[in-house]
Amino acid sequence: MNEPHLIGFLLNIAGAAALLIWAVRLVRTGVERGFANQLRTWLRHSASNRLLAAGSGLGAAVFLQSSTAVAVLASNFVAKGGLSAATALAILLGADVGSALVSQLLLVRQSFFIPLLLLLGVSLFLRSSNDSLRQVGRILIGLALIFVSLDMIRAATGPMVENPGTLMVMEYLGRDLLTAFVIGAAFAWIVHSSVAAVLLFVTLVGQGILPTTAAAAMILGANLGGACIAYVLTLSAPAAARHMVVGNLVLRGGGALIASVLIAVQPTLLSYLGADPARQAINLHLAFNIVIAVLALPFVGSITRMIAAVMTDKSPVGLNLEAASALDPAALSRPSRGLDCAARELLDMGQRIEKMLIAVEPLYDNWNSLEAQAIEEQDRIIKKMHLEVKLYLAKIAQQGLNEELSRRSMDLASISTSLDAASDAISRVMLELTQRMHAQGVSFSPKGREEIGDFADRVLGNVQLALNVMMNQNPAEARELVAAKEKVRRVEQKLQRHHLERLREGLVESIETSNIHQETLRALKQINTSFSMVGYPILAKSGDLLKSRLT
Image 1 (cartoon, helix red, strand yellow):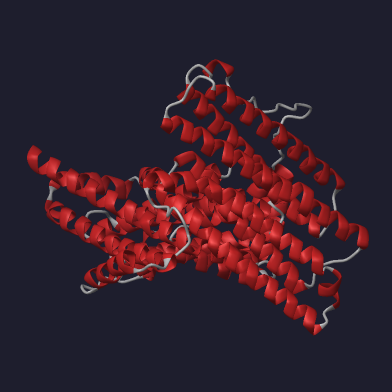
Image 2: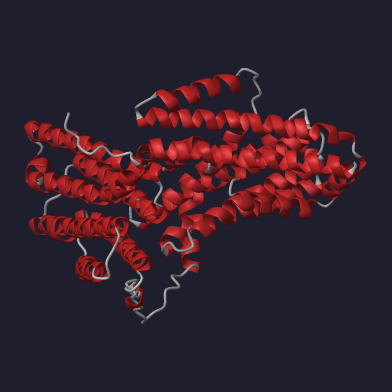
């Protein structure tokens, strides 16, 4: 192949692979923005048995097109005590099967799919005023682009089938399965998507570019690479929240190595998985994850206990290193940099309040005086940070600010006040309510407790979104955050009605905890409102905010 043709081929392959990676991410973004709360609730309610947990993980991975995203969600639930590590591992095993199932579905070739999906997707995204329908449109556009990218790969690799140089390299991979395995794992890691990696490898083997054994090794490598992504993303999580991720890494990675050795020794095993190479490769991916799930599900409890015995929390003992304040006095003479320092301090405040919210909900079920003291201490720190931010902004203002910087200073002061109010809602309302429940020896009705948990999860999701907005200043995410405020208000009203209905039915638990239930809902709504204030300055600047809601 001459040099111009080689450059054209590489550009086409690189462009198609880039489109595939971006399209998979587009689908995942649409699901996360439109249906994240429903998925969180779905996963939280799957703790009753392992089969249901695995089924929930499978469904979540199909929607998100990513077992990694499911792993991060499950890790968050374990960290806050909403799931056991064993249940989370069952969810993750199901998610691996769901991710493999997605790869099967996306390889279906129908000529009318692309124009139909694009027509529906663009229409929903541009014409719909409902945010959920807009996200459905985003998902359909992403699916269409996945099919387009796969067609681009087929078109680009078609001329390479007869090229001697290409055949020589691919034949080498067919003989050196260890190298093929490593390439598969590395590619899945680099693109952060085992789905995209598997689709690329299957398309190449379907075109006759890759030998079947090389494609099988690369797909198994992609399973190891996909498990490594979740491991790295949860490195900062508590040890208890990482047990299920490590368990999945051991099972999926170890299983992939064993399966690769079996294929190297007995390549004829692939013939049982389909009539043609592409079908054998994609069926291997699904069969491998199903076998791992079936073999491991009965033993998830034992597996997580073994990992817990090996893994220990490596937090330094006896050290209490508080984060240094971001309010740099040296930046006072440079207002723009000083305001950046104040913004960093506010981000730290928000992250502290996020931890307080995660810590306070379990106290409704089991009182823990040490946790309560830690929350109160965090509230005192928040109060101190709020005062220091106000004084720091006042000193910056003394330097003389132009209109833009003055507006930004006022926005930061407003956000600081809102975050302080959120801290109050946790420490002075929710914490006091949990203490009252403990002192009175009462508990919510099962349905009431479920509603409180689901609502707290929804608010926590919006708090995390607000922290993202504080970092990236993204107008689209800011709009999503502000829109969520109205959704939370409607959900809170609905839950208040449900509570009153239970009171009318005479449920003893509902009567005993009536005020606590209603005040908790109002406190959570206040926290959500406080964090939604982060989005308003961004939308005002972009022109997406009306000056008045009055008609």
